[in-house]
Image 1 (cartoon, rainbow, N blue to C red):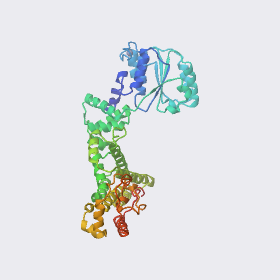
Image 2: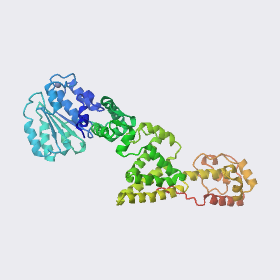
Image 3: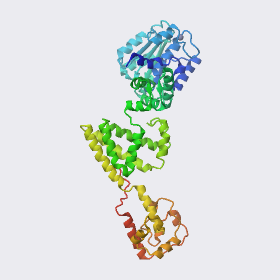
Image 4: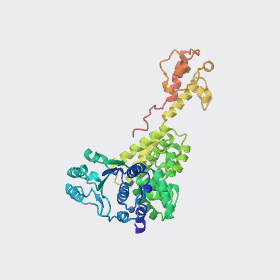
Amino acid sequence: MSENHQVLFRKYRPQFFRDVIYQDLAVGSLQNAFKSKKIGHAYIFIGPRGVGKTTIARILAKRLNCENPDGVEPCNECTSCLEITKGNSNDVFEIDAASNSGVDNIRELRENVKFNAMGGKYRVYILDEVHMLSGAAFNALLKTLEEPPAHVVFILATTEYHKIPETILSRCQDFHFRKVPVTVLQNYIETLCTKEGLKYDSEGLFWIAKKGDGSVRDTLSFMEQAVIFTDGNLTGAKLRKMIGYHGIDTFTDFLNQLIDTSQSAQIFETLENLFQAGIDLGKFIWDFIEFLNSLLLIKDNLADRESINIPQEDLQKLKQNYRELDREILVLLAERIFSVHEKLNLMKLRSSYEMKVYLEIQFRKLILDREKPSVSGLLAKITELTKLVQGDISVLPDHSEALKKTSVNQSQVAESKNQTPKPQTTSPFETNVEGKQNKSQAETFDTKQSSNTSAPSTKPTDNSSEDMEKLLKEKFSGVEVDSNQFKNL
Ligand SMILES: [Zn+2]
């Protein structure tokens, strides 16, 4: 990476409280401490990496020792401020607890805190990754925290709150830092693009922000790499290429191939093309599972979630395109492919070719199962049959054939038609096919609601009852009523 690009993260590191993004709670509380002149002697900053803990610790140190503070902000111009910015202040000590975790390090620190501040008013100790300290080191630190010299301020920073002893926590004021949402990061890097004169589009910024995973530091580090990779043109297409993501067009095509049986053969063409292009098929399958999950979230109006991997401009398009698609199909598909992915990880295949062959077999199996009627297809069949039983033979594609197949007496059909109770409104699964021999076949398929009506029931002959049973068997021959059909490979 060139020196020029490394500058990006440092260049925009906040030097004032007001420049810190998203950590309003922590920043506001610290500013209030200065307003009320209630400065604590021990703070603990808790939160994920790269969200501004050390940055804010430095701003706090500056403000504590600033010669000309501007309200709650440091001036960033006095000697003390400039020295802290450069990292060569004699009063501010940044200690990486991960590499200074022993009791001796803390004992040395305890000796050190006795000295008065040289230039400023306070000696500030910033202990990063403080959870890495040994038990003995924590005990040694506790003694200092119990009786801190008036001129000393400790700022402990940690990503792992639960590893800090309760005795230490009880001596510190705690400040919680949060992951920065994608949209906030997107807006932030957009302002940086403008300042840096970089070209970009909304999707490009989305992928950079996503890659940062809530961390400003990681976002800017990735942005530096992206600037080099894309030659300063941060578009969605270039970013997708950089991170190896296929984009929703590839996934929607693949999904369509899976749900439309006439396109099934293309699934193998897609897998072959990806294989030939040297794409990691395992990653593709995982990304596709995430896509299916996102689609379900979109259908449930939960697309504003942080974790969703779909750029804003594609969300609406997907919602529209898959409005009619049954959730059940999506869930079953996602579950099946997830299980394929899981097995793929366990098998430790020797080559990408073996992976392709395995996937081809699994998708072939999935297509075979897909061609079996689904539960919702079965429901449609039952509804169709209910109408037929009620006398509405127009629901059948070929009336004459239907009549040929059934030996239902035409007059009975007419009779049944005239006296049919209301059409069903609830699930056909709620009906009891076997337990109502004395009632009409129409009623047999009726809902609980309509079976309570006072509509007169017809009394079909035993023959028609047998005919109906025959018809039922014919209609459902080869149909497996199995909602698990997608689940088990
Ligand atoms: Zn200053």
